[in-house]
Length: 305
Figure 1 (tube, rainbow, N blue to C red):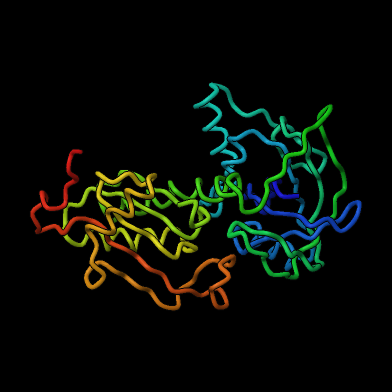
Figure 2 (figure 1 turned 180 degrees about the vertical axis):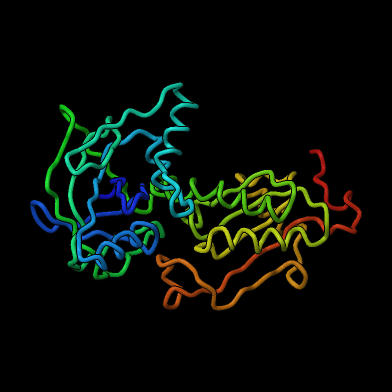
């Protein structure tokens, strides 16, 4: 099960997030739960000697899928993001329904698996992740499914690992987080893109309006801080289209010099799905491909052809 958005609550905090499930039997599965909010809830529930009630929603609308892929501060309910998107796009709130466990889930889900994360682990994997390599096998929490709700003639939605839909729901929700962080370091940010070649997770491009010589490097550090899984980021001027790989490479070719525009960070926290990382630690490269601030701008402007 690859497209399930999990709903969980613990001590008044509600969370939506994607987690894959390896089916172990009719009512059990091993679940890849990365060390973020749901993992924190699970750990706290296990410390309390109990179980964590969850609901896995499959076949959701785009708004809930995007919200499920968003990383926000612990305590912020991603359902509010989904509701705001629905209200903005469709002019109506999301319909919800309360299931037997007490959790509230989107009413239009094709399937809802109601269950519990228990104090038991099982091998999970191997599985093709966003980087198109097989993720390693880990001991992961076990889900026990108590009930299954579904619509008439339900559609079972899957996400194929390492393809565009996987990229979209991983990368797209991270882009506004990077945008906000870089905007605090550099006043004018035009666009942010996590690139498909970087699996929409490991490589990014940010365009800015440069006002000071250090803006490019400040933007590099802010982008890495906002998305710790990213290992390469290119900063370009606002005249460069971040969604055009040739345009970005042109900026690197004509505006970048490694001795003054390259930032290398050693042994910092990276992504668990990067096969080249060592125990979760990686080196990172930032490329300041903006025009030198003191130089004649005409030397770096594109000719009109």
